Amino acid sequence: MFEWLNKLRQKPESLRRLIAFWTSTLIVFAMILVWLTNLSSSFGAVSKPLAELAKDDKARELASPFASLKNEFNALVENTRSKLRYESKK
Image 1 (tube, rainbow, N blue to C red):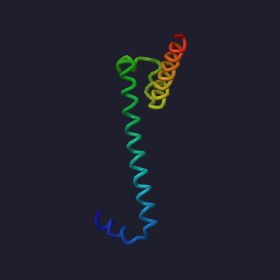
Image 2: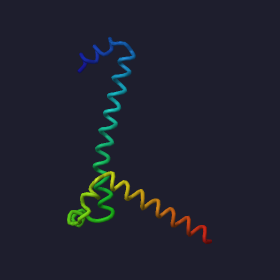
Image 3: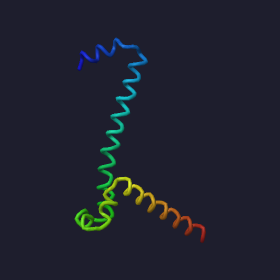
Image 4: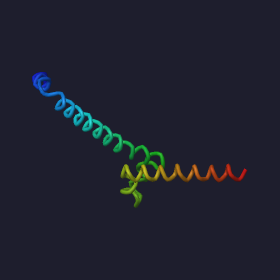
């Protein structure tokens, strides 16, 4: 590892910056992937216990992190709309 770093230090700065950029990009994408896989289980646990969720026909849809994120965002939008309607009636 240290030998590789010494070789990298001898490369031009533009190449070092490029390697640093792509390395950090890969690390961020890996972190996002881990976060999304954990996010789906946390959203599913909020709406229903996981045992009930496994019995449901919509289990595949809810197990997807993007579907869970979409459902939670839609619920947030609906909640905000209902509060705005309530405020405008006052």
